[in-house]
Image 1 (cartoon, rainbow, N blue to C red):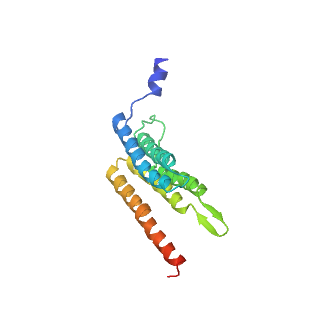
Image 2 (image 1 turned 30 degrees about the horizontal axis):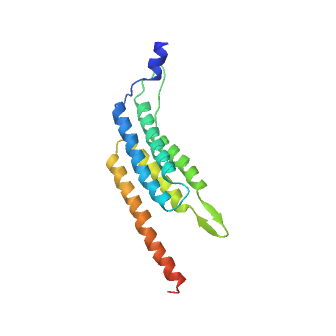
Image 3 (image 1 turned 30 degrees about the vertical axis):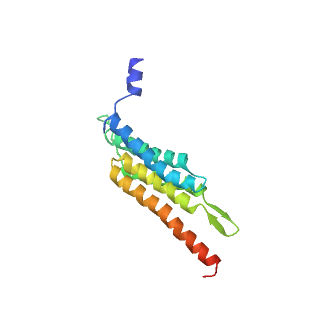
Length: 164
């Protein structure tokens, strides 16, 4: 039984548990910022969704990094391709994002929310690999696009409604 417990709770090989935890917390915080913006704009996929996507992507990345440090038996050949992880996270998040897109009577809604979900996944991947500054910059740019350009789009709508 002690061996079962020790193998269930093995220490990480590629980083310390505190580093992994910090990376996931950063992903949660940055995902929350993007999700808060979506939620404050009354979009369906908001705070919790973006936090979960970002943290899950970070966790998948940490797991992939752990797999690259996994010891294989002498007879077994272990092949690790970290790019497959990025492809898997990207397609998984794209599936979720596609679910947020609604087409009714020629009108498309949810594209920006879907794109922000995809960004949350990329932010999580960045956090998981330890590229926290890159994740912060991406989150800042994402928030800039979501907030600033929403005002530009509203001004354009107002002008077109008033004929000019």
